[in-house]
Image 1: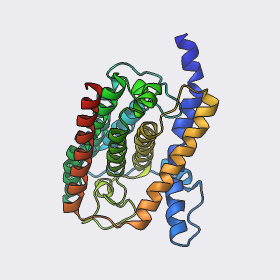
Image 2: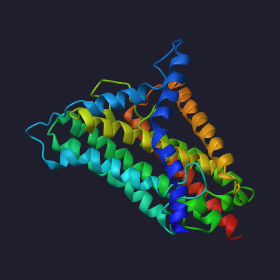
Image 3: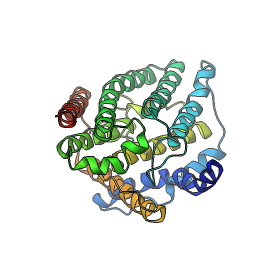
Length: 311
């Protein structure tokens, strides 16, 4: 049965690996539409990845193995997380009870190696970006953990597949106000972790205002392709958590559930494009207030859910 399950998961795994760049393309097209432009071709992110993979890599003499390991470990951590997070269905390939803790630590591992690789260059600009990344990461992770706590209390499970599956659909009727707060908190976490406006602007080239982009200035060729794809994959994974939490489905057939999830993820990408087109990047001091708001929302949701489930 395990072998048959693994074989059946191959098409879904291929789709999970192929979809992330398309979500970035949808965001770019949405922003172009708001600006009255045609925007880049739909497959431009795929062309960029292929071009980067064909290029050579340049390493500074001041860097060590940490700089070279950063992009690879970051991508590997996200690929491992992809086996634990439901994307097109309510099932996962390697999910188990308590996997939410491992997922959070895999995301933290990817961030840690990216930060260490940036600091390994000895560049003051990249060190500045690494400092900002760590600061905002320490504020977004508590909001993510508290959101998981709410889902665990609502579904009485520690497996992410069950926390975002049919049990959550039944729990929505009892803890709807708390779930709305969680969805809002997860949206802020998504924008923060994927370095989108209003927290960061992935299109900017001003070192003094960048967070994530300034950390990867010295990466090139395949290493930069790994970083670019990892960012898109992270958007897919966190977006899937948000979509599953906001719109839980019953145990439908995969051929019905999967296309519907793709549409929902596309709508989420369009929403991010609308946000980036209608809002400006926040000042760094106000980003901390935004993340504090996400923490308060998820904390209040945890209190409401605990009171509701134990009343």
